[in-house]
Length: 437
Ligand SMILES: [Zn+2]
Ligand SMILES: [Zn+2]
Image 1 (cartoon, rainbow, N blue to C red):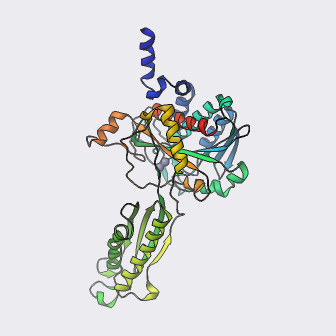
Image 2: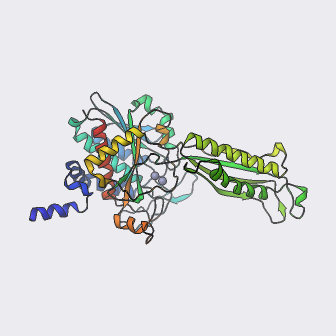
Image 3: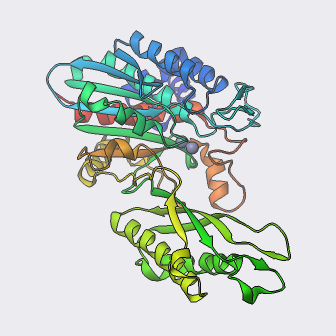
């Protein structure tokens, strides 16, 4: 009786699977001994994109201590940790390492008080407001479990600490630095992200976890004149306004209703004074898609609407709007269907159907630069989501009775214990299957 009671108590803080899964029990012990202090350290000491120097050094130290051969400075501040264990597949697991210029107001004991000068020289607060500290700690936890189970798998495990995800540059930098040429091209790849709108202790895996993103600038030219004599010029404010409205029909009329697509005009700048018609307006757009076909239609549609709205206003051909990318495009993160089905089956068999958060539905079209590691590379990959918020809070939010502090909020506060343990458990379970002897 007493034994049962103690066992129940010990399991209260753990994912439900811990009671019957020895791997989960080992992860729970590692969490208390090693991962919790590591998470607290990472959370309290966040670093901005391209500045992940101390973070990368700490990650390298942790992974070396687990028996991995670690190379630092891959793609500026990235790290690659290799554990060779005989003949078998090479599997990559990637975690991102950067934090955001957000002032933490979570009230957590390990809350960040860090302020640094950003690349523009401005003093900014820094916070792990996207949970990349959860990803890094999960990566180290996975390293511990895989190193302790070398008798259960064969192959090469490749753990990647990627910089500058929030600036969508780190993955490209690591690719440009020849990560696959130097360390081998993986046969499979995995990554995870913690989500505030998913129940802690659970996961979600879907066909398109993240969208592709294009950041576009449109310069709409007009012909400047007096505000009281509009007929003497071409008013770029009116033309650009019609373009903003016209762009909405690209999504609703050009794209099939069941295809994901989005155009947001996030910035509109024009003019200097009420009685002056200026000679240009500048629009900035984010364009999201999940297939090459939809993306091509969106980009062509933007150009068509912009050019022909200007033509309709009588703008001459040599003054049609200019359209250009302001940032490197990010491809969509698409899961390999066969690998996803395989891992769903493995997770369900080993961890129970309860590991999936069935109530979660992906809403927005967020991008992820992880796609640069995978897109067009022919590497089967699965990117899955890990819950970050206690179940009762998620349930209240889904019932419309509460709001959640979402990723990037100053109030973002994950249930680190459950999130990290679930991240390690799902990743290690997947790896042990992909690399089974
Ligand atoms: Zn983020
Ligand atoms: Zn993130």
